Structure formats: structure tokens, C-alpha cells
Image (cartoon, rainbow, N blue to C red; front, side, top):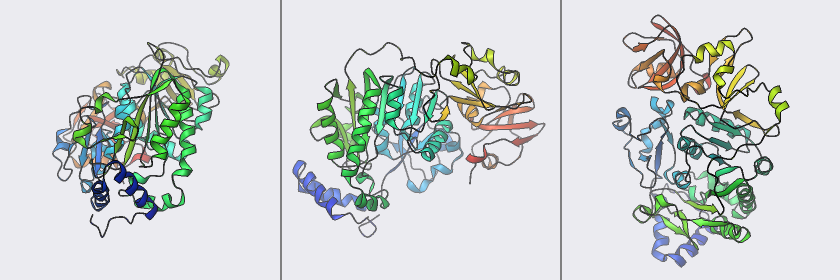
Length: 486
């Protein structure tokens, strides 16, 4: 990108940035800011710590020509990558080993101190870049609630969470104020990546400039303040909340937070420990009037414009996650929910036969049967009668009226290769990897196959991607059609 191809910035925005940057940093800083719009925006990918717990790049991905991977300083699992490298066209993307994410957008989830076993809420979660990281940090324990008020966006969010192999989740599409009525002080951690005027993304997506001209910061501040109030009300005492935007607007960022802190003396801004050592070296800056906040400017750091602040709610933090509240016993029985602590003992016959061979530890949980679909809800959680769900727990599969069980795509992605006895492994560079992802029937000559015929867990390079039905040397493809390689 150069001056000829750089986006034409709105004059009111330019004047505002000139006044702001000149006042705080000097005239030269403003000129550097303008010059940054002639540079290429940065691209990045974030490794999935659930599937790559050692955060080691697979050898095939590390050596992939054109990706040009190098570490992002503020995310222990983040990498810059060349925009022309097309990481979404690699089989490991379909295996859920990484999520393609703008580098600055990795900060909010990285500064929320999530621990396994907690109850975590991502209030504006679609498309899932931050939610997948929060879910991975839970390590299969506790629960992630991922919400987006748009139902269509929530369905895209679900796909990304299931591709990442997150089993302990609820995906909702609900108004935050309605969630507040159901979940007062029920979460240990809350993330609010608020809708905003998008000033920080003008270089990356010039189409946002027109939207900014139609709806500026004044349109978003009331929405953001409502989200903060809802998120704060759902946070348990002792918990943490991250508020973030992708705008430079002081009104939408520090202005919102300072007004919030004035209304809520039980909250305080907290310094993210994992950014103390890298802030200066990485070119990150403090918030205006909130030194604990993080600002990313495109002329200072290798990323697009972003703001994030960590807030702490004073009070005694519970030693363990708070129990959920939900529908009463009668509703639970009508939904076919098992109350047995060992959910495997309550599986219908066809499903029980299948799960005798599954060695994965999904915890105790609760079995839920709805319209021939079997779900595993995280331990202690319930489906709330008044909430609009897109997914309740891990979809295990479907059970026909004749008792035939078919495992789900989500289950395959939540498993490790060794957790199901019948499987076939396709090397990442084998042409059959892409053929499987396109939904084609495969001949298995020369591939590492194990176990008996029938349901077979298909892996690429050792990482599950879906199911197939094996008979001898032939694999009938059962990869979910909605996810296929196009």
C-alpha cells in the first residue's frame, strides 16, 4: 500500500486525530500517524492452545512457504503472517489449530485472567476470535457463555467455537439486559468487545469509513454504556471485566470507562500483568487518564487501532465457580435432562454403544435430549427457559427413532486422535486431506488406519477433522457439508 492506494480519511476524523495526537505526543506523532495509512495492514493468526497445549507450530505450518510467520509480542500464541500466505487454505485451519485474527484484536482476551473451572461470558462474541481463546483457556473445565444479539452472527460464532474444539459452552443470541435478568453476578470473568465507530480499522477495511460518516461515536456511546452496565451486573464480586473497542475515540473509550468508574465505586482499573514487560518494546501506549488501559496506534505498534482496559470488581472472589440458575425441575424433566452425575450411564442404548469406545474426559456434566439430538451440558449448568440458545453444551450427535446413533462434527473436533479407537490419519500434505475436506469418498491405500470398520475418526497430521464410515479400504465421507472446503 502507498499514498495512492491509502484510504481517504474523513476530514472531521483527521482534524480530531491531529488535535488529540499533537496535544499528547506532538506534531511529529500526528504526521507519523497519517503516514501509517500508506502501509499494509498487519495480518495474524492465533494458535489454539486447546489443540496445541505446548503452543508449538506444526512443522508443516512453520515451514509453509509464503506465510512468513513471526511472533506477536503481546500474545504468547500469536503470529504475524503474510497477507498473501492464505492460511485459511491450509488443512490445519480446518483442524482448528489456529484462528485468523488481526494482531491488535488478540489483546482483550489475552489480558482477561481466565482460569480453568471458571464461568466466563463473552457478551459480544461474534465472529469468535476472542471467544475461542477464552474457551481454550478454560481447558475443558467450567463454562463459556458466548453471546451475540444477531442470530446470524451467533451461528457463525458457533461454527468457530466448534471448529476450535470447545466442549463446555453455551452460545446465545440474546439482548444483554435479558441476560442480566437471568445471570445476576453469575460470572467470574466478562469480556465486552463493544460495537464502535470503527476508526481503528479504516486502514484494514476502508468500507468502514462510510459507516463512520453515517454513524459516528455519538451513536455508539449509549450502546456501549448499556453493555458495560449489563456486563458489570453479571460479574461476580472479585471478578474481572475487559472492555475493548477498535476505535480511537476518547468518548467511546476512556470517556465511557471514567464515567462507569464514577458510577461504580466497587470497580477499579487493573494493570494487565502480561503486558507490563512488552508494552514499551511493542509500541503499546497507555490510555488517556487511565494508565492501566492499553491503546494500539498503527504508527506505534504493528497492529490496527485498538483500546482495551481490565476492570476489577472489588469483593471476595468465590473459591469455585458459582452454580447456574435455570429452569425448574419440571422443565428439566420435560426436556429429557438426566440428573445422573455420570452422564454416560444415562445414554440411550445406541449412543451408549458408541461412547463405550470414547476415552475423552468431558467431566460429569448433564445429558440433555432434544428432538433426537443429544447434548452434554457442562457440570452444574442448566438451560434457561427464557433465553434464546443457538447451542446448549456439546452436541454429541443424533439418535434416530430406531436407535441408530450418528456422532456430530462438534464431537469429532472436541476429541484428540487417541480418544477414539477407530481412525485414519492423513498427512497434511497428502492430496487426500483436501479431498476429505471437500466431502469426497477416499481410498485408504498407504494411510495409517487403526481399529475396526464403521465409524472412523479422520485426522489430518494427527488432528481430528471429522468422521467417516470405513469399510475395508474405502472411507465414506461424513464431513459436515456446511464446513466443506470450497
